[in-house]
Image (cartoon, rainbow over all chains, first blue to last red; front, top):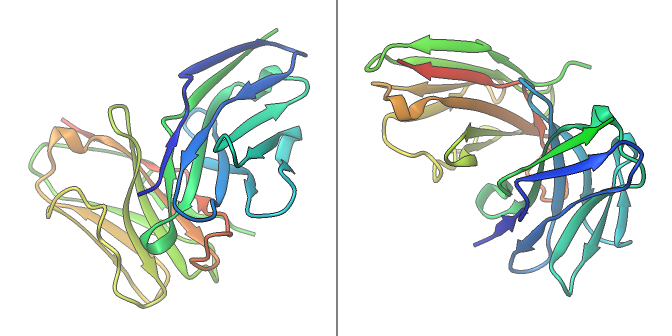
Length: 113
Length: 115
């Protein structure tokens, strides 16, 4: 069985500071990892994914994520946070029957001016 | 192009009534997924369709839940005899194919409230 953990329910950062949202995973075989963002009363929007290749992947809105196989982590990062980045972030792994997404519990990012 | 659409956006129903939730996937996407987002359970997989094949129903929480996909496109999720614990946001997603490396695109969801 595959699983994803997001250890922080909420992350608070000041605008302009770097941000990190943590994610660890457990899968058998190669991981296919995704980050999604959810704004209030909206569906999930795809940010970025790791399939293979470079451990640092770049995505939408200036976000990037670092894949670390030895630590089974896939942390989301951004060099300079914006107030508009405040949202709910989900890490997910795709696999299993039908290759559905298995999500972490989500992390609420609050960026303060 | 058009994204995944869902209707209704909000549904309030009385306990015991049946409800139908609709999903229109992105044109050409063969894989369609239903998920449920609730405060207590987070985001959980419900059911998966690939083209015209039989669906994978392994995530459905009870036999009151069913879904169909007509013509390999539009899908309907039906909940019979709704219970208060069914209150959640129901999200539909589609993917070009079922390949693990492909992202899924989500609709805005249907917020179901059972009173």
